[in-house]
Amino acid sequence: MTDVSSLTMLGRPTAQPASPEEAVLERVPNPEPGMAYCVRFAAPEFTSLCPLTGQPDFAHLVLDYVPRDWIVESKSLKLFLASFRNHGAFHEHCTLLIARRLVDLLDPAWLRIGGYWYPRGGIPIDVFFQTGEPPKGVWIPEQGVPGYRGRG
Image 1 (cartoon, helix red, strand yellow):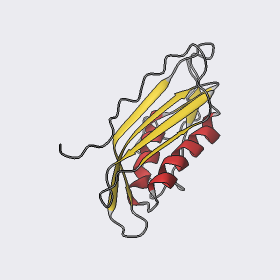
Image 2: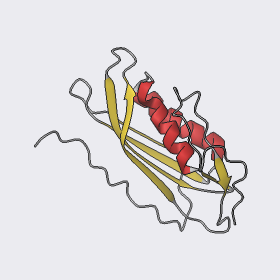
Image 3: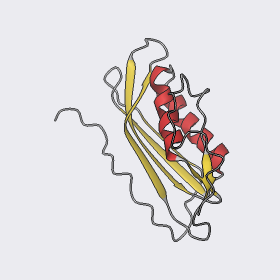
C-alpha cells in the first residue's frame, strides 16, 4: 500500500487556491517504481486570464509524464490547474509554469505538455514543451488534439 499520510487535501474539503503561487502540489511514492509507464492528464477546459485585458482564455492541456520515484496526487493537480482561473498570464507562461512546477516536484524520467489554446485575436496559440527524449520502450500515444480549424 502506498503511504499517503503526508497528503493534506485528499479525502477532505479543500478550498480552491487563489493563484498558482498559492497552490500546493502534492506527490505520493510511485506505486510501481520498477515499471516504465506513461501517465496522462487531460484538462480540456483549462482557463486563465489575459494579463492585459483580463478577458478569459481557454485551452485544452494534455500532460504526459514517465514517473521515477513520485507521482502527482490528482486532486492537488486539479486544484493547481483551477488556480489559473483568476491568474493573468500569457499562454506560454501558463503552459511552461505548469511544466516547471511538475518537473520540480516529481523529477520525472520524462515530461511533455501540450497547451492547445483557443484563438485570441483570431490566432490560436499552441505551446509545447518536453524535458528530452522519452524513455525507450514506453508507450506514449499521440496527444490527439487537432490543430484549431475554426468552424469549417
